[in-house]
Image (cartoon, rainbow, N blue to C red; front, side, top):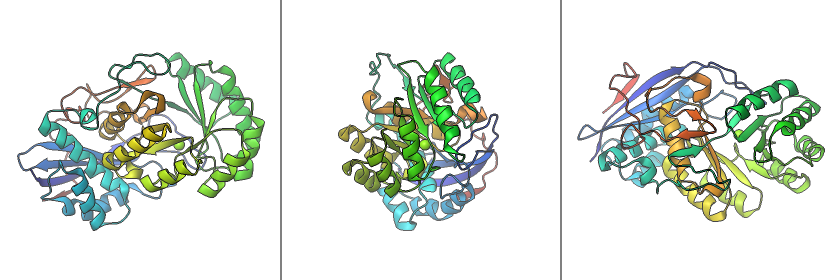
Length: 378
Ligand SMILES: [Mg+2]
């Protein structure tokens, strides 16, 4: 078993609805898909797609540039040896976790296909029993949905629509405007959510520590968490000490070491985690084991992308202990495109059903689906 060839494709994902954050909005992104071919012809897929250039330090053109260094470094390696493959990528290039994630995910897909098992099983297996709220999951993975930045009336209308569609987990975007507007939106949305709903207020680094503390005090009576209210770990510590709400860390959770530090210091009450920021399923598996053992809830998301990265996010999300799962997030509601029309992950009443199109990631992708490769490494 050895990696014989890696093909890289550009896949435009056209947005159908708006997605607004404190410091940016996401337009139509160009995803990067990798097709990894093993010596026996088995093909696995990986993907990385980053949101707005303002959201994370990486960029989609940079992902493709990084693959020119990373892909040749893993040719000839056994795709089942995830630690070896990741070691070779780290030796070839520092940083660039999104490019590494695409290749790492493709190796897991190949591994599943060769062993005739799902990636979910290779990651340890799905928790299919009842969740903390008594809902039986089966092959469904909990998800959460975003309510964008707008007026209180717009936020309430969006939240109400999601409630009607069966969602129980809400992430309200805030920041980038005077905080009294955010306070009004938080109070309005909290006012329409039923007791079993979960509210995370995600500011995507948009407030100063003082602003975050003021918002927290003004909303002290509301059961919610504050996700990445400020930009730096030092500011988050200040908010944790002087605010009234649990802190969820997203953008600052850049590595296993950083996550371990934020757990042991008592800063993080939860994490929003992205495969492309951590470098793929192999590092995410280690983070999962740490978070589950430390009893710190986490999500399994991607920044953006199509069916492949969504299937990988949902696969890891299925293996989270239900009590400590914040859900898996996928970008499909925004672009509405599928690489596998039958099995591509999509939302259904607050859950995402695991794809069942075969072993590996569970997707049945037709050969030639992505057209002519942008680059081929062999
Ligand atoms: Mg977030």
